[in-house]
Length: 156
Image (cartoon, rainbow, N blue to C red; front, side, top):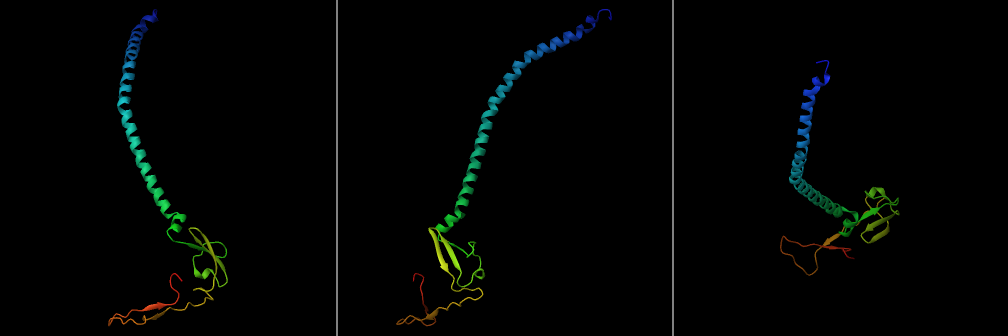
């Protein structure tokens, strides 16, 4: 046996050749099976990703609508405004200004500049309380007295 080492390795070599042939024969079959499986799974994957993408797109559009609803320009379009103090910063309290200070109120179509004449802060000029008075020539029903506010109106 040691005089002819090739004989000793012959069974191993035969087995190796047999396994290589089996692998070579199995390889095209395995590739074909993998392609068939890919053909089945690829459309499912594409559909799942498409559905996920549509869902994310809808979420993004909803968040964009919410963001547009609270965007400063759109809030101003709805009739709100904000006022900047003498230093150009947002005015959050009447105590941040004093009579004579210049302020700017920002509206949807521009700014209105004003001078503070009074307010609730220190040194404020007290506002006159509106006078309530019955409308002349009208007699209200007993227990239901109507009162009319005299003074500057909403649009005066």
